[in-house]
Image 1 (cartoon, rainbow over the protein chains, first blue to last red):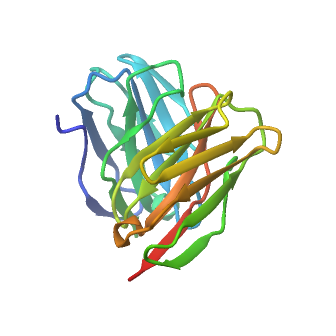
Image 2: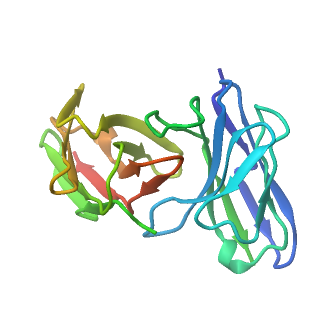
Image 3: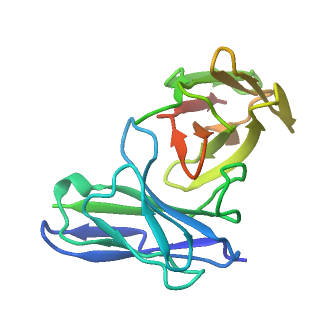
Length: 115
Length: 109
């Protein structure tokens, strides 16, 4: 099992550019999520999905899009990058779609800089 | 919004000593989880304690939960250099976990 795989590890964008952060898991997890981590702050939830075709917004969804066409993949799209989106992004998954009484499995993160 | 708040923000101790970090939260919870993050890496789950539990152990880790005070503590006994990391608490209600800003732990050799 590879677990949760994120690509790329590093990315530099110019303001206004778009890009997609990839996330894939091979554990057949129903729940997948995207977080951003900024210095001095806890993780903040961007979007999450409880299964293929089902997504919902988290705490900070503006400027980001998601879709879930398969159980394995949950890409995060930045539509028009802004410097405020400079952050480290983590994808995380768990088996149970409906309960937080399970641990999350995290990818290794994508460090994004927007100039 | 930030539900869990860790205390202290940073902690530096000698190898072999015990490390204690605390987490406070504001609303009712189903569970509280602790995670570790090594520098530049993803988070790794350490332990989950449910709201009806008061104490839980896992190896050198001991977690307590006091729902009346809305607080939890993580104790790492006999610390090692490899314990150097940031530690985060996360409180769970429905679909979402709410995270604290973390405690940075440094173990000095």
